[in-house]
Length: 349
Figure 1 (cartoon, one colour):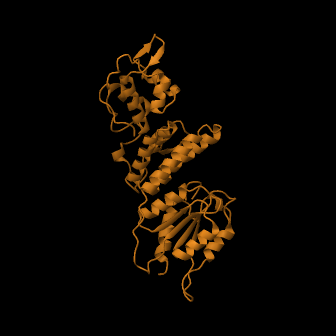
Figure 2 (figure 1 turned 135 degrees about the vertical axis):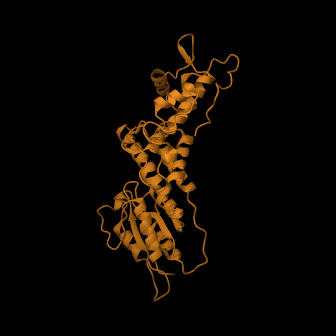
Figure 3 (figure 1 turned 45 degrees about the vertical axis):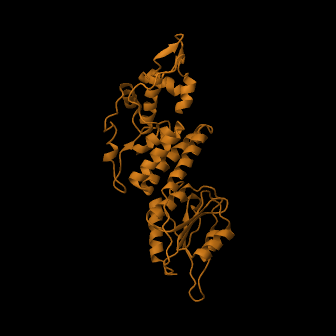
């Protein structure tokens, strides 16, 4: 499944409340902390788009009034939603919403519905090396770089609600996560906080959209799908996406998460009688063919009708490793389709 494969406050229409008597306004540093942007960004917006403070104390120091702050809050909200900065600045200064159809693609209402054809692409980087990606990635990247937790959560939730877990993961979440990783690797760890924030909210949104099916009293129904990281493996995001995608289809799962010990995994297989077991390995050092073979050989049931689970090897760690008799999906959609077929073909318990 590849490395990852397998908002702000409401806009104010007016200038906002007047500053208390004697209040000279916010300094640039204080405003930057309030908005979650850098002081350099505020200076750039002032120089490039005219979004500077209306007044300067003593003719030199910047002091931002409530009216200035309201404009910049609008600027942040619109750029987090993917509106180009120049257009967002114009709307913030004029107190209007941008056109329903931005210059680089159709409006959100016109984009591809869940599971449909390709949506508009954007090459805008938003501070990260995104490349040719869906338009939603731009706003998500900007919100992540700005450490705007509310905007990140809103962007991710909107993508899942509109496109479903699989498309949102493969075409919105993964490209942005990859871009953050590349930026982190090329900038001397300067973007590690961005990667942590984005990963946390991706996990939160995936879990929020995971709705496990109710229990069934049908003893003949196929067992659930077990999802587990191999011992020593801590990367769980791809498994969380797979778990959410399976639950979206109403397929029962048991998610065990990171670094599951061999003994615990074997015990779970015997207790649950799963239709399939997914073993995630991010690193080649953690991918163990003997472990996979051990799980595939684990049996349960009465004598004469013993059964074994199908084993699906997911993650880049398995690349180049022997996988005789085991399944190897190439992407999240492939994994979901494979597991759905495996479970439907599983014999009754």
